[in-house]
Amino acid sequence: MAWLDRTGTPYLSHSRVADYVRCPACYYRRYILGEKTESQAMLLGTLFHNAAATFYKAKSAPEADKLFSRLRVSKLDDDRHGPLRNAITLLCQNRHSDCDVVSIEEPFFLDLGPSLPPIIGIADLIIRKGKSLVVVDHKTGKTFNDHDPSQLVLYAEHVGRLHKARVTAGFFDEYRLVPNLDRIRKPAFRRTEVRLSKKMLPPLILRYKSAWEKIQLLKMGEPPSAAYDCWFCRPLWY
Image (cartoon, rainbow, N blue to C red; front, side):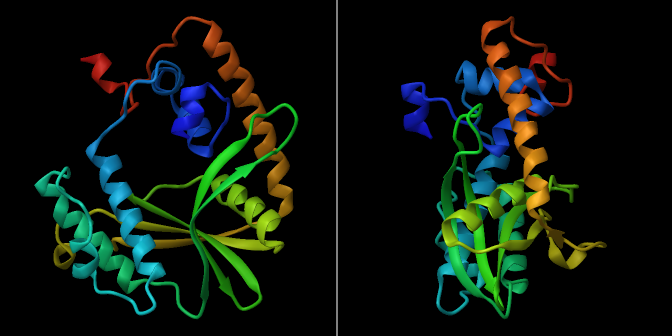
């Protein structure tokens, strides 16, 4: 992606479309002006995904402390070490069982139509349960959220093309970041199954086409106003 950005090669990703829909000004600043978007939340999410990849690659499941010790957490604030360690503990406790791992952190490059640039993404986890393939996406955050199933639809399309297998289900595995697992009053892990079908792909393509058309206009017009609740643009309001 960094190479594509340097060469000015157009492409889209699910996260870019989501950023545009959430806050056009955020998209403009991040992807047109190229402003950096480093944050502690993003760093923690990256570290957790690294731990999850190591966990599912291992022949025998490693312990949470061992997974945490392998991470480069020097840039992560000290008060986030505990929540990250706890999220990894929940990962170990809620491993997908009775399945075979097919792929981990698998990048893809999809052509969804002549009026769209390539769609780029990374499927967190692809597993085989019985005769079916299943896609899994890991999420970390302070709260549980209602996630857009179209992200799993995109992963399923990739799996169908590359692995020649139909995907009928996917999971969002959510890890709520908490300082102490012994003092929580509600669960800190949630697994949500999403039923998938080919009928969900055409609406997703239309959504991407609409966003891409507006993004092209965004490049030629005036910078949009920042959304008040945008985590990236919020400092502009103060």
